[in-house]
Length: 168
Image (tube, rainbow, N blue to C red; front, side):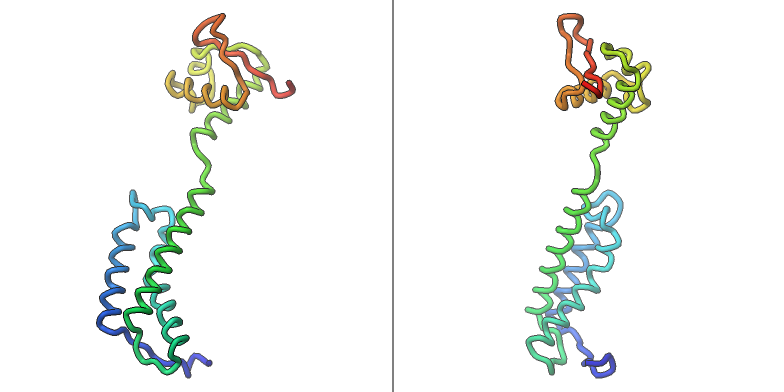
């Protein structure tokens, strides 16, 4: 079907209401500090995409249709909500945890030092900038303990660690 021979579809009153509710749903969740912030561009186009999906559903059911009815619009909105949730999930799955990245930076710094023992105080005084306070350094060292990079040496001191060097 060429573009010029495609039928012009309008929304029924109920379908238009459904579309408006969907549009408000997306708008209320899109923007800084909101659940769809990371997929802002995708969410901004979700209303248009829902209309396109509703048109396809309508024309598949009835090729001579002139209006998009409520069931098609409702199903299109459901599909788009699912798509938005999937898009957000995929985005979040690919975002590295900054805490893990900072712990990795600390690990690299420890390995470059090539010393087997270090105190927590040395970490937050001399370590990477993201390790420069006691609480953060302690949390990062705990991650490195869990990953086998360091181990605590309570026999020496409560804040004393033994570094497992890269080649061990």
